[in-house]
Length: 111
Image (cartoon, rainbow, N blue to C red; front, side, top):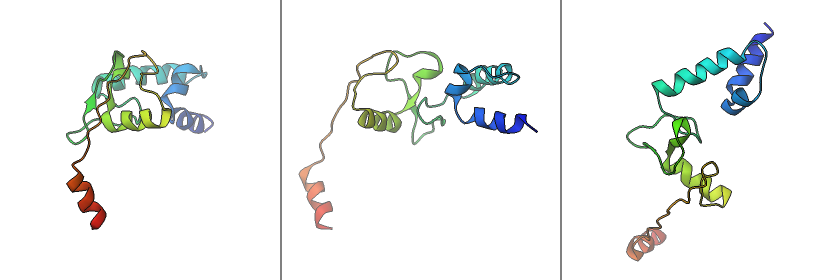
């Protein structure tokens, strides 16, 4: 009974599972971590899988499970963190800004 809340609390954050030793659940958590990435790659930001609409990309030099991100997640992280380099490997992201044709912007304003 006591272990159920502790286990669900440890599931909420992969970082806390990996960095904080908990008695009784650490080996189980570590084995789960090593099994999950090999079966399906996930975004290191949102922890969701990629799909056709939002595939996982590898924008920097990070390796292992930390190399995958969704482009939208990375873009949002860059905007909110106000940096243009990877916090882990320090790779400088190459950002492209595409300008919309003025005609499309003007049409949206009128509607």
